[in-house]
Image (cartoon, rainbow, N blue to C red; front, side, top):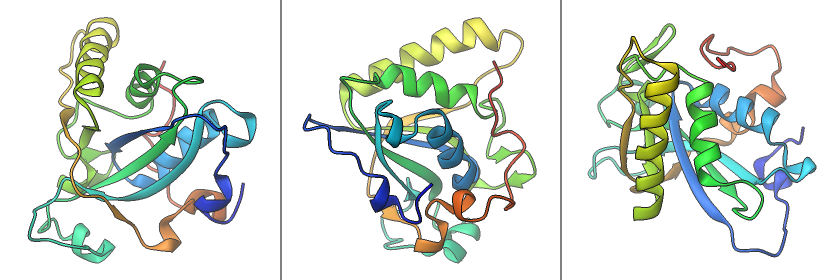
Length: 185
């Protein structure tokens, strides 16, 4: 893969949309999405960025160290620019559920804290409805004995993480990856 998220951009000439997911350490969330939907293969993802969202309004431009303290209430998240004529939002939501544990509150594997919460940050009323419908379907089909605790909330201010976090597991293939970031079905 490339060395920066800007090099991953593929221009298809169509109107793109944004999807934002928080499901633990953002390195692994980004890595698994890009392995499944590599922009070079025209599978719908155009560009990604890892960063912080869902935090306190007073916590402007948080740093990684600040987010890790839990005092800003931001989640580590993945922002995906995608082409809806190639991949539908609902497919991305379902893939998100396949690749982490949505039944644990404020944790993924050994990563614990509000910054590791499972949340779908929606960018329109339509995305909110789709996220709720997919959540119900996934709950019924894959988590009958457990309750999905993933939040669904309107996307707020986004802050890109520091450059060394972008595409981290492509730059450092042996870097830390949360064990929950794999395909579960």
